[in-house]
Length: 307
Image (cartoon, rainbow, N blue to C red; front, side, top):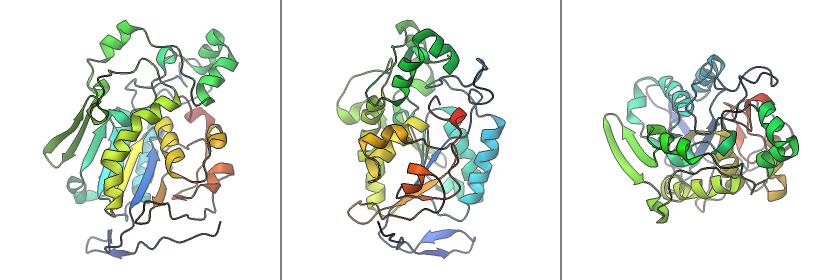
């Protein structure tokens, strides 16, 4: 497909950053957080590379360093709104990125939502891949990881009851700007459901959880020509990419690996169609995606799939 370059024009303001010149094209910048304390080291080491899901594990030093690099890459990009999950590793990645924008960061509304939390890995949470394969078998674990509709065994209800009392597990979507905070959704009210925190999730479940946020909070801003920065997690960004990138068909979904802490930017026309960009970096499906990679999309298997 022939590349169609974005018509979004950028101009310098007095601070040296870019701002929209009023063109109608919305832009979406997607970033998966950097490596956490559970995503580092040799895969044979059972103390790391663990299924994390909704556990509030902090960023590793490598993750913080990478967030600073992203901030430098995006320093000249005007951001109308920033979005992240309720989990600290994503929020901290976003905070570091915005800190590179200096005084303007307080002007940027930040939306935090449970709908962009990582996939809930059920009873696999806390297990390394090695331990999980020993208990359930490699074929079964591979199915949980790559089959769109396969969900791990559910987490026990006693553990869930404890988790539900933690702030990062509450089903809340809020917007913060400067010192003001506004609640956008409590529970699953956007889809008229009374469901509580999930006990486990397939990738299909992640998509079902994410879509109301896309429809209620993201799409209206993009249609309005805004530039939105989303810092989230591997599984959520994977289903988001499946919905918006024409290259990704269901048969290629399992082949997509979202690199940690590498921004990709999509530009939309007035009808919310992706304006395709031609990538000169990346390999396989990553290179074929119609968004524009802002840095080399290097995939480290130790940092993806069990985030």
